[in-house]
Length: 121
Image (cartoon, rainbow, N blue to C red):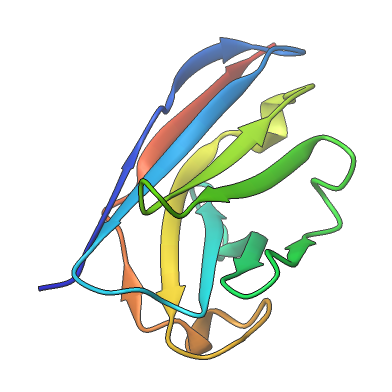
């Protein structure tokens, strides 16, 4: 059974940092990604990392502030968020695809339950 479990969310002041984790069990995937959804808004691509080569792709709104990485020994991916802004407030979701994919959420087959990130001004 495939499970994606996010952790690390919370409340942080603007300018601060947080690191989200996504523990994966059940199988391995070609692509692991992060998405976020703020109240009243559509889900937004944050970033993804490939299994082969660890190629990372980040969304324009987070480039230069967020990094994505993976620890294959722990079957875990991370989203390191720095210089956080109030507009980063959202529920952050981990997602997985059996294929090498990019920013299209429809290409991701498995999703975690989400973790709340709140950035205060």
